[in-house]
Length: 311
Image (tube, rainbow, N blue to C red; front, side, top):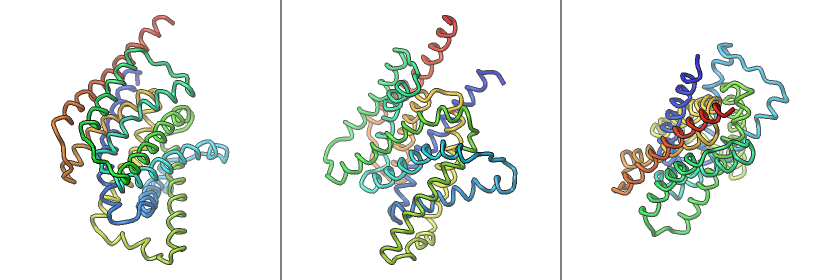
């Protein structure tokens, strides 16, 4: 398979990843109204690990990792899913899914900085300009969305911002690991880390308050189970596989800009399912975001071609 086709598949994976993550915000919002955020995360990663372990148990997919390999991948799992999803879930308790998508779209800025420092990734001036254009679309939507933020809302935004920093750190840390390990190996280990941490936290919380039955009580709600299935299978397992594959062929800064597409999906999903308000300014911001995403990746391709010619 030539490089052009390989990168094409990587772009498809990145777009699918953005679409899945964009819709995940509203499903998270639906689940945290039924169960405690920690319980949602515990159920989510338990189901994800069960599903992803099926092909491993039956020998359809081989996982060959030493103890040393596990220690290398565990920090990745602590950044995402543990910190990323924990901050996101608690942030969504006092924020809406549209705000979450908008704040998540700031990830390319953090990724660009971290990738340039730790991975020595170089970006052209045009890439930086298009990236800032995409961010400008996000900021425009955020400003036009307006005022009236309560203290609780500010707390939610701060937590969502921390989740975005963790997402950026995940992309930077995952980039070198994807060159050494298969996407399935990274997915399996990170899901296991999330499952252990969140279920331990949930069980300790219920044991200390004498409410162990509340751990399984939400599982009797059909709407909760439906949202949980989306989060566990698509938004956790499949999205991690897609991100790992895309990062094998794309730079961390290029991959992260696709998170801005998640903003558009989250706004549409929030308006359609949760009936959250959408104004004309959303469409203007959307055009800026899409132009920035396309420009960042197209100018990045030209930059690599020029660098190759000079080399």
